Image (cartoon, rainbow, N blue to C red; front, side):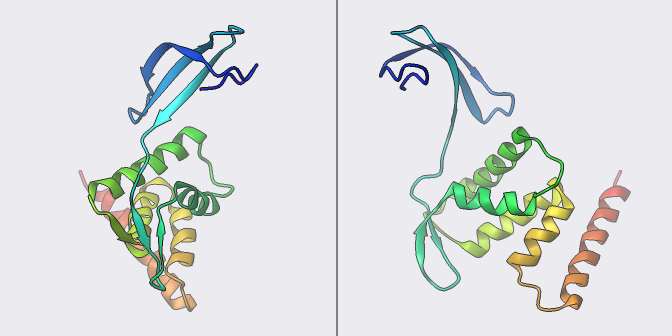
Length: 158
């Protein structure tokens, strides 16, 4: 790891802790040349997953694409950076639990919607409207009614 202050190639780890989310490791580092101290966060990443697009094309999984789609749906919605990172990590954990080397973009989209539904219902509707390509007001209204039903049933459960 290069020092962000002097760009020296060698740093040492002075402390390591599991982050509060339990899904990453926070490391405190010090440059062996200039003594500058800084922190890094290490997260696991999905490797060797191929995404099969709707048109049949195949491409490697991209965390950036997932994050971009989520950012669009969460635009101007209240959330912290930590909550956003946690959401991305939970979605990726759901993907990893499938233990597949290939997944359709449709399957990934369904996992995203499942997580978004509990995270932010407005963002869920935004994502669903693009993902499901609502063709008319009726299909959009049907999705909203379904969201209302699931919310009421959740509130009624003991």
